[in-house]
Image (cartoon, rainbow, N blue to C red; front, side, top):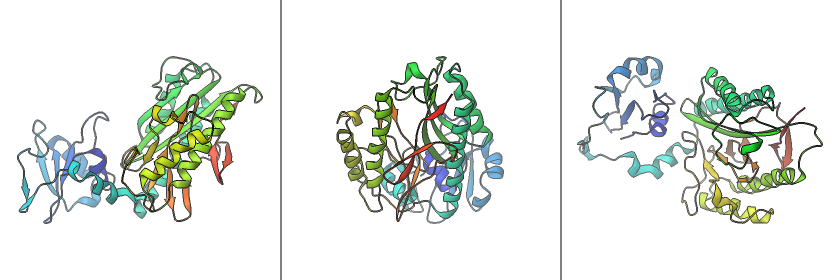
Length: 333
């Protein structure tokens, strides 16, 4: 029984499974040896079938009244087999959807590129006097116009850079700002963080510049370790150990999550110590090492020759780190 947005959107080839971004899916899938059954609220069924499920027309459709559970709680056997909830097969399902299929990868590349473009556009349109909410509105609107659900849109101006998850406020950007996006389309989620700075190029605080550069070295440790066949726990241990190696508090990693595998969830899964998942070829990741006033995040894809950065806009300035082009601050006069 597949019940979550992550599992249902994946199984239904990228179908939109929500009405409210904050709500539960309006559909569930019961996967059976004799054929799959789509349980969908009756008032959503016609739209879902017409607009989201053209390639899944062979599903048995069970129209459920809006006031009843999508899948009855008492169901305990299907085709003579015990029913299994997706939470009881979480690791196996993650492994099944980890490596993107060719059609998924085409969609994902386009999504990641457009998220990066929207972030560049928002940064180029911003001014120091703009409030964080104004910038977030422009960014969210641009994403929505591209058919991308803005699941997360964070903006921090100078006065709020200490916050790792800065929900936008009325505070002005000031001379430095951070933008963060998690955008979803076709069920897939792209993640990226960008920094911009206003004023003369010679003005940046040397300590800020140094921290921003060193956090890229920490990220490089994560990326270098993210190779086919590696245990995710070992990748995590390598990346978190790099904080102390590059002049940060060795415990800095405990103050914010570090990211992990990506795809049909913002992190699928979020990496934690000891996690047993194994890195697969064709699997996306989004690491986001952070320290006070410093953060980096892009969505990448694991290939045979290393990771490929997907959230790329050639208009954004970069700096070479460990053989990769990584985002620098966008300097605005």
